[in-house]
Length: 279
Image (cartoon, rainbow, N blue to C red; front, side, top):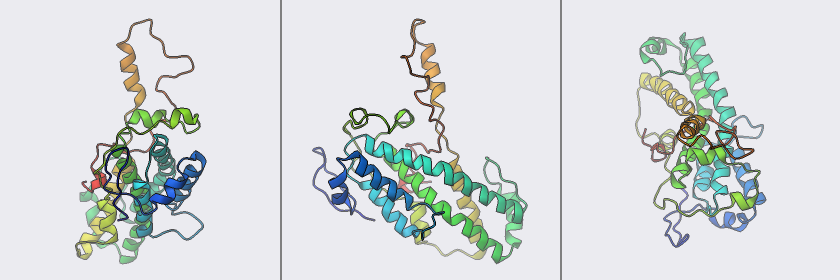
């Protein structure tokens, strides 16, 4: 992992920083430059790119830097989380459907938004050829990049105390006077250790053939579970709050209930322990 000791940050001692800490610190005062860098780094997770895609190890290096950059204003982690949402909302659903199509084609299993029923799938899984198993495995590999982004987002939400309301109401087109408020607190000892990705890169256990086949389905189930874990609908919460207010209360002019139309993106809750690898 790309961690170095640093001295201080807002009078607090940070145990880790990215290898490219100094580079980012040179450009972070310019919103245009820092956003440009983050946007380009996130493109490295695009498995459908015409350029040669990075290996999972290289993508982990990039994610590690994004996790430990010296963010000092709220716009920085919020912009990164927003861009992750936009990326995952497109690629994640495509990857999910591609694997579902293979399950239906080769294993006669129709998947839905519920959990994987291993009792129904296990018999066919045992009898399919190695060629089909490899096809399933090839289809699963790009989901690791998407999962890595989801785990990075979960880590950022936890470290910078980004609740769902902040994320939904964030608008990167607003003035820097609004978005560039200083980060007043953050967790200083939180490690970014996506165990699921680390285990994929360097497995600690050698499994037999059938267990490997089951593991492919399990990993798909984990990916689907995270991808479909939407945030609670913020409008329901605001509506409940409004009912408790005096009848004369009205929302500020120009504001809609819910704060923003950007809701129900592909997200995972910040109180999930996934960035520590606990699933």
